[in-house]
Figure 1 (cartoon, one colour):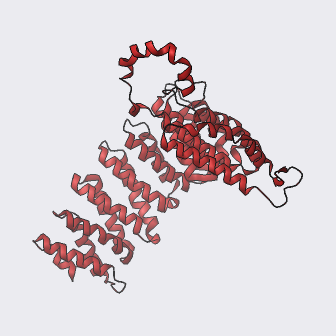
Figure 2 (cartoon, rainbow, N blue to C red; figure 1 turned 90 degrees about the vertical axis):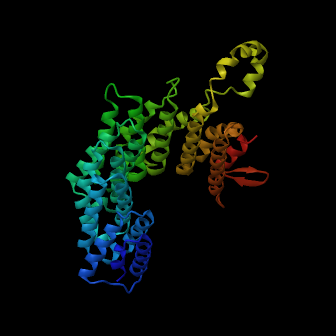
Amino acid sequence: PSWKKTVNRDKDFRYMATSDLLSELQKESFKPDSEGEKKICRAILKLLNDSSSDVQGLAVKCLSPLVRKVHDQQVDEIMVELVNQVLKGKEEQRDICSIGLKTVVVEMPASAGQQAVRQLTPRLVSGIKQDTLEVKLECMDILNDLLKRFGSNLKEEESHSCLDALFAQLGSTKAATRKRAISCIASLSAALPDRLLGQLVTSVVEKMKGSGISLDLRRTYIQTLSAISRSGGYRLGKQLELVVPLVLRQCSPSKEGGDPEMVEACLQAFESFLLRCPKEVVTYENDITKTTIHFLKYDPNYADDDEEMEDADDDEEEDMDDNDGDAEYSDDDDVSWKVRRAAAKVLSAIIVSRPHRLAALVPEIAPELISRFKEREENVKMDVFATFNELLVQVGAGRQPDLGADAMAVDGDAVSPAAAALLHEVP
């Protein structure tokens, strides 16, 4: 058998033997007996720690067909061995075993899912609590994959232990840690029953209301709510009366000099609420629309051309004096374009989720979009055009053969009220 040759001293022989083993595992006709399964599994696990990175890479590829061919008990042993290497192994072992474990989680048969959750969840949670950043990040990556596939197999106490560990990471000073924690919480929320999902959202809201909470942590909580909405879908609707007012307060236009990243996070949350919970968010639609239109024009570091022309003569001498100060500012520091881009996407969500209100929305939204055709950032301009195009598509889709008494005639053709409003707004 090819697996016997994988112990050869020559790395080229080991590489060829591992390649042959991979080819055998990929054949439908290859079905080893119980003893053969054990020997193959042990051989591949050993190859994952091979001194040759090429051999290690082939060993990882072997895991995909292997876990679909061997019995659940062997899959169980492979998982335990790999997760222990992730938690306790040296850096080189940890990296390759982490990739291997992700492969196993993604490729294993569904029948092994319950056992995978029992074996991996407590170990991964313990890894998330470790001080070593690399272990922490790898464990959250693997947990995220596990929750996406088998989150419904979690018991309530396992869900709570995951949430406790992940919530603690939201306060990390490392952006990578916070980002992975948010992804895991979102994946977990999709599998939670309604009662636990409600408790999760309420917990985030209560933490947001805490005194002395930092700007970074508030922004992280907003991003978490947005991610839960994207993952949990309509199920978040029952909690929107708690969530939306809180998010609106964080990005109120009255907060001059607000944090652009916070505003962007809030707008992304609005986009998700509108698309996932269109009925429940209707109460806050006007407030969200007004806030979004305000931030579509948000460009605090750039003066409008018309204003520049009016003040050019008066400010010419002052500008020359201030040149040295302006040199300290770089376009690389300007992140306001992210706010405008997020606002354009919220308006698109409003248009798509409110086709019945197009006639009222067109006079409010169309002029603002048209005024931003002069947008200086190319990627934002593309989003503005895409949103305006969505408006045209929705208005066009609203035309019916029999438009009824509300229709208007333009050049002899009947048009819907929304189309008439749009024609009025287009210069």
